[in-house]
Image (spheres, rainbow, N blue to C red):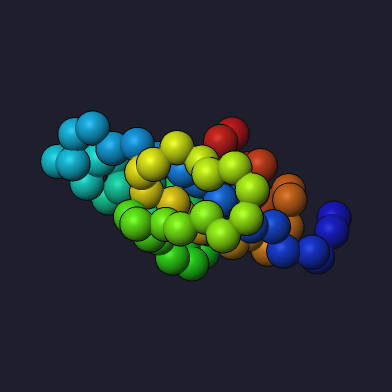
Length: 74
């Protein structure tokens, strides 16, 4: 098992803010259960170099290892 932290960068397009808030409330206990940590989010990201991702919310999570990160979806 590797001790190297893993970061997930997620780009979301939220169409229904109320539904997303309900999803978010259910997601954070699962994230915590697998040792995940919420780092930050940004709704107005700026790309400094390269191709811009689609617009929306960018979220960053951190996990203790790749194994821990993969366990979230299991």
